[in-house]
Image 1 (cartoon, rainbow over the protein chains, first blue to last red):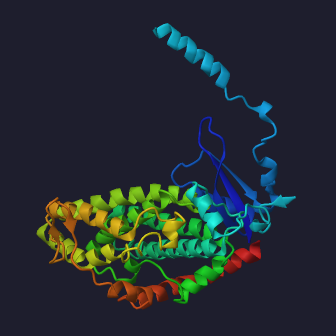
Image 2 (image 1 turned 90 degrees about the vertical axis):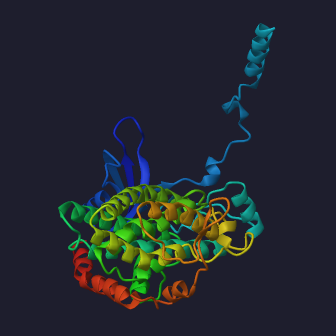
Image 3 (image 1 turned 60 degrees about the vertical axis):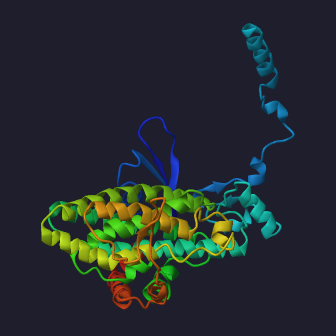
Length: 92
Length: 314
């Protein structure tokens, strides 16, 4: 038995999403199980199956928010304050 | 470099102690399979999911028994689809449970068929007539559905919450089929009405007991503390009584509870609940436990050749 991860994509512009996993002896059975377990009611217009051992997992620490890189974000505080000031100025 | 096939705990978050973990849960944290979760959490959540998976499987096998007896082609098709849904739910849940690394899927199935695992009390009784199956499809499924939704509402274990989303959606279809079947019996011939009343007399108490005795005081229940359950057993049970008593009265049925009363605020209060029947089912000592487990085990044995053929072809 091999474990497969199942991804489904609805018709339209949505991205593929992880739908679950299943055990199957070969790729053909995996596709059939996936259709019967995950797509009985048009849950997806497209389906991907990937053997679990082929999914690389990134280190969560490497993905943690970069507190030392504030230049990658801008919370817009300064501009928002200026706009608020202008709006309040208009009201008076 | 890791892949998803590696043992998960090599790469997730970890917590200093249970207090640290509790603070994470209280702060809205979600636990994922890669996390080094406390053993207590892993064991409790695993047991809960395994119980749910077993119940879906045993429920699916019950539905299957009624496919040949369902009146008319449309209802046979509905029962086929529902059976497939329930078995599908069991599949999803067994995968989530197996990934917790406590037992393999095969171990869970073999222990269930050996009579060593627990499943919902309602699948320890026999459905005598078609009306019993309607009572199960409506009243019993509604009770199970209410408790699943209450888990889905918070559920700090990510993979469980994600499969519950799908399970809850499908159980919604089942509810609509269930009430439609009830409507047909309730508004049918006097014999059909009597048949459903007799079924209600058999199934009301098991459905009410499904929610279990009152939760232990405060947050003594770890499943409440760790936000797997979002509501207490007694609150879910009370909401069920409040919803289904008027609905069944509306269809002209009597609730088999002589102490049932409506208080000054209009709230329906069930009489004293005898918990012995529920406890008996947890020891596999329910009225139909032995036959149900034997049937499920026979089904597993009968299909062994399919599993062997698949292994050979792989």
